[in-house]
Length: 496
Image 1: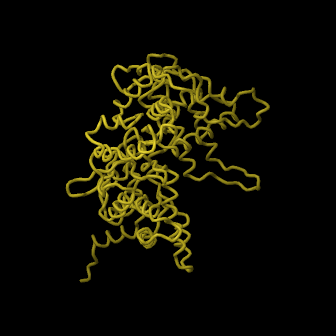
Image 2: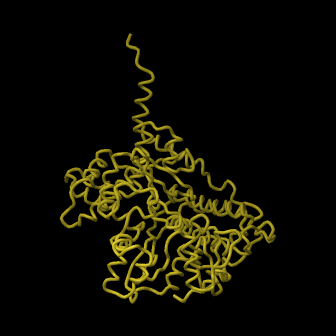
Image 3: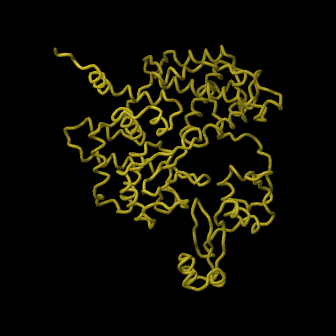
C-alpha cells in the first residue's frame, strides 16, 4: 500500500467539504476528532504518566498499554477494523498506513480528490459473447462503454453526471446494492443475463433498448429452453420474476436520476402481482425449531470450546428471535449498526439497517436474553450493553467483527448438530434441518407473528422490514388450517 498523501483526501462530512491537513500527524488528529475515537497513538511510560495522576490510574485506564510498556520502550495503539489494537512499536504498521486504512474504511465520508479514472470493471457485468471470434477485441468492457439513443446528454438534468452505460451501471450497483454483497451479486447476475441476450440479438447498449426490445427479452426468458440432454425446460417463475425485477429497477433508477430520457421498462415486471402470488415455503415445523432451541441451549459438544459454543448460542438467539436477514447482523463501523438499546426495565431493542438502507428497531423477547448475556460475560463485557457502547455484537476468535459467512456457518452448525440427534426414522425432520439456513429462521419468525399469534400485518411488516405489506401478507397464506379455525369460530354450527 503506497503511503497516503493526507491533503489529497476530502472530508465530505462537513459543509463545505474540505481537504485534510497536509501532514500525517495533523491528519490523524483531524480524523480522530471527526470519528470520535483514536486512530494512531504512540505510548511511552512518560506519555502515560503525563495523562494520568499515578501509575495505578494509568494501569486501570490503559491496562493493555501499561502491560506492554513493562517490557517495551514504546507501544502503538491504533484503530483496525472497528477496534483499538495495542502492539509493540516494532510490530506496528506505520502511521500513514493506518490512516489510509481508516480513510478507505470510511470512504462514504472521506474521498480521494483525484478523478475516478476508468470504470471499475469488477462492478460491470461481464458480457459472454456467443462467438468471441466474431466480435472485436475488448468487447466485454467496450460493450458497456457506450451510450444509446435514450441516454440524456444534458448535464443540467442528468444528475448522475456520466455519459455512458458503464459508469451508469457502476453507480446503480453502488446505490442499490452496496449494503449487501448478496443483493449486489443478484443484480450483477441478472444484468449479465440481459447483456448476454443483447449481444446474441445484436442490440444494445442498455440505454438504446426500446420497450419492444425489453418485451422481446421477457418473452425470451419465459420461453422453453432446449438443453444438451435433449429435454426442454422452462425457467422457474421465481427466476423470471427476479430477472425482470432487476431489469426494471435499473431502468427506473436511471430514469429517476435523469440518465435516461424515458423508461422503456415501465410495467415490465408485474411486481405487485408477483408479491400477491408469492408464498414462502422454506419453513421448519414447530417441533424442529423446538429441537434446535434445546440443542442451542444445551451443553457444548466435547469438540467445541465453551467460548465458541456460547457465541453460537447468542448468534442463534439473534436470528431465531429477531427475524433478521443474514446481512443485517454484519457490523457496519460507520453507522455503528447493529446495536442494542436497553431501557430502564432491562428490555432489549435490536437496531439494524435493512434493505434500502432503512433502519429498523426490533424488540427482543425475554426468551433470547440469557444466551446474549452469557456471551457478553464470556467476552468480558457487562451483561447489558451500556448506552454509549460502540462495538460489534458478535466477535470472531481474533476479536474482530464476525462477517456474514461466519454468522451463517454458526447457524448452520446448530442445524447440523440438531440433525445428528434426530431419530433415524424421522427422515423428514433430518432432511429439513440439513437444508435449513438463517433465512428459514426469518420465515419462521414471520409465521409465528402472522399466523400463530395474529399480529396485525402493519406491525409485522415493520418488524420484518418488508417494503410492501403484501409480502408480509404472504405468510398468512401458509396457514390455511388456522384460517379455517378462525372461520369456524366466527360462524358456529347451529345445533338446534
